[in-house]
Each structure stands twice: as C-alpha cells, then as structure tokens.
Length: 400
Figure 1 (cartoon, one colour):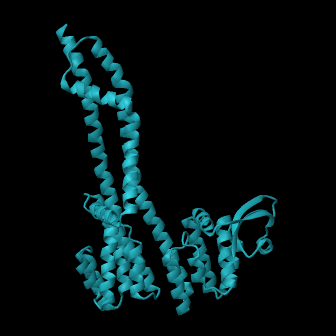
Figure 2: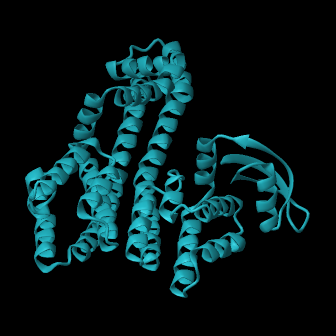
Figure 3: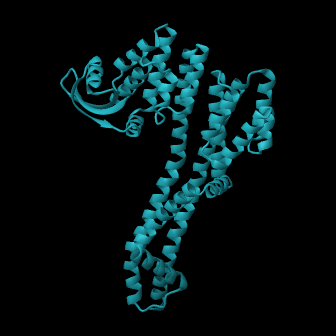
C-alpha cells in the first residue's frame, strides 16, 4: 500500500492538505469521500516522509485525546473499527485524522492494532505497540488505552521539565555573551583610543583588556563558530564511535549537579516505562528491554542491559539492580518490597513519583545555583572592564 500526499476540498470549500495510505488513487478518492473531502490532486510519497510529517503534526494533547476517546468507546463496548472510525471523524487535526485513517485501513485489512501502531514509530514508540499488544492478548484494550493516556501525560511533563532545565541557562548565557561582545567590540575600543591618545602608560590589566577586545573585533566569527564546531565534532564522534559515545555518557554522569539530574531523569523514565508495561501484563523481560531503550544515557543503558541479563539468568530484579551499581539503595529496597508483596508495578509507580518530584527539586536547585553564578561571572567581567578602563584614566588625571 502506497502513501499519497493529497490536496482536497472540505464541505466549506476550503483547501485541505494531508497524507494517506491507499492502494491507488481510486482508493484514496474513496477514503477521502468517507471523511467528507473531495480530492483535487495527489502524488506518492515515501513511508518515512509520511511518518515524519505525521509525527511533527501530532502533539501530546492530541495523543491524549486520541487515547481517551478510544478508552471511552472501548469501555462502552463499541467495536474497535467503529471506535477508530468515530475518532477519525471527530478529530479536527488533519495529520491526526490522516494517521487514524491509515491505522483504520490497516486494521480493516486484518492487521492487529499493535502492528498498525508499529508502522508509525515516529508517533508511537515501542511502548505503545507493546501495551496495545498486551491488551489484545488479555482482552483488556480499555486498560491499555488508560495506561497510554497516563504515559503521554507523563512524557509531556518530563519534556517540559527538560526544557525548563535547559531554557534558563541558555538564555542567561546568550545575554552574557551578548553583553561581553558589545562591551569588547563597541565600548572598549572607543575608550582605548582615548587612552592611547593621552600617551599614558597602560597597566597589564588594561593591556589584557585591549588584547581581548582586539581579538573579539578581528576574530568575532571564530568566537561565534567555535562552540558550534566543538558541538558538531562531539556529535560526529558520538555517532561514529560507540566507545566515544560510552565514554562521553559516563563523563556526563560525573558533571556536578548535571550528572545527578541526568541520573534522576533516567531512573524516572526507567521506572515509569517499566511500571506502565508491567501493570498492562507485559512480561518482565520485555518490560526491561523497552525501559532500557528509553534511557538516553549510553552508560546507564549498558547498566540496565546487565540488569536484564541477570534477571534472565534467574536473579531477582532488586538484586540485579543492586549489582549494577547505578541504582540508589532506596530504589533497590523499594523494588525488593514490591517483589515480596507482589505489587512490583505499584512500587515502580511510587519510584516514578518520587523521582519526578526529585527532578523538579533538582531543576529548581540548579536554576537557583545558576542565578548567582551568572551574576558573579557578569560582575567579574564588568569589574575587569571598569578596572582596565578607569585605572589609566585616574592615573592620567592624577599626573596632571
């Protein structure tokens, strides 16, 4: 089945663009008619381009609405095909409507819903397909959709936390660099010319300031490009060398404050994915495999891979986590309690909640630490400029 990018007219006569899977243009025309659109023209597109476009157009809020709608319809006993049809017809977002139509076509063709999700990895990751597959096997799709709703909300909250952690330092750094560039490139050169014209002997602090100002004025492009080049080199090294990726990942964990934040985020993601899948009836080894892949740090991922191997060899999860050396003793004790009580999923939920709060506190503490640090840095720069400029001026006035 090919994918088509189409232009069509809706009932109001307005042009609508989108992408759909269809056997041919006749099939595409029939599908568009079912959702109240009249085809104008179309052209085939690649599957990867379709998935990427759909992923960019489907927000977390729309995913939540999608799964809440499916959960309610399934709880009411509505057949899956009718549920998907209702979701498709009720959505106002073109890309979500096209995505639902594509999934509906796959299910109508005999594919399980989990396999239909697997065809859109940019929108639905491993967790989505695994949870839906577990729901299909157990006959509890309603529960799977409920867990997916919870997961999307949590994932969106984590994304906002990460943005919050990165946004403030980035803004402050840009402001400081802008201030430094303005002072060194505009203010200092003008004052330096005045000092040189007086013939006053300049102290070392002023000479250093002049040298820095000259460098910024003459090599401003180097100053701007150097961070980008360093970042690009690191990215290339990480992608081309697994050893380098592992080494940099381990190094990141040792960075003060940031390393602890990375670890807490990783443990929170691991516990959340594990809890959601385990409570949905997914086997523990598959839970560990999926949870291992969502940890973005390669060093922690290797540790969690070791945990999975030990569990596969018959070791209790709590002991395997303790042996890895990457999980705090509190987490290991909580997992041990969950194993003994038979409530491992609930305990992992508690771990997620605990570390979500801990991550928030760590981000707030980091921001609180950055504020005075940036103030000190900017103050030191200004003090250097004032000392380098005002010192010779006072000396010049005193000698007259």
